[in-house]
Length: 289
Ligand code: GLV
Ligand code: MG
Image (tube, rainbow, N blue to C red; front, side, top):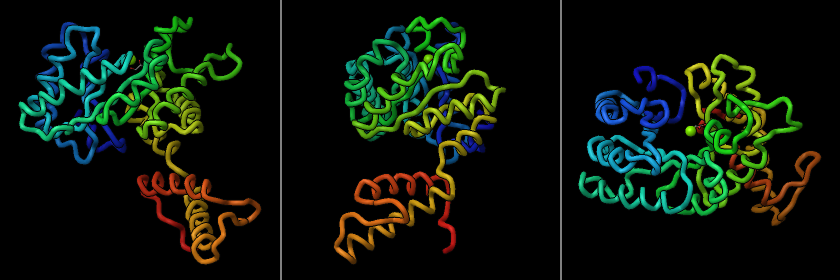
């Protein structure tokens, strides 16, 4: 927790779920509250992962953590989400706790983890279940367990499978998230010392269009930022496309024009805009002409 503010990550979450021993669940709430209130979290998006609705802890996690430390908290993460009703129940409880704690209604956002077969089947209704929902996250370890994939480590490649055994899963979650205008994030890579494998795995979801991925260890953060940020070349090209397209549409009244060897149109503008916003968030500046 001490290291968190100085890491290059965009967000940090404190875990009351699977990284927290069952015997510690109740006592951990107070420690999380204390940490939220006393640590300097700088400009990090701050989140707490609570326990899922099949346990006896979910409502009490929300009441204690949001009720006592809701002001600095940005979001809660709900694991093993199976249907829209679980998001709606979380939303309603948050509303009450916010009112009781004197927080603005809607102050706390929700991140939902898709990591069970039922959750994946219902991911479309889940992604549209509440305006509080900011992010959908794939949880490969629990998902491998839920699918009964014969592996002992989830979220790594399976060399025996010809292709990416998670391709359908990634695409389904990505489409559901994009259709509802929320962020789409890939979960953990468990071999924390294997930076080459990690980089390779990051590229899979980055290439499909995911917004980011979890880091389990500080060393993974730099790789993530590199893989999920546009290169300088892509950033400059995006600027050039936008300039060329603006000139064509505004000065010359054309809808489609040539840009080097390729034709560009409104779809090109939309693609380039995304590179620009991601690059700016990563601190890139346009190269001098
Ligand atoms: C994360 O929670 C996972 O199960 O992969
Ligand atoms: Mg999990």
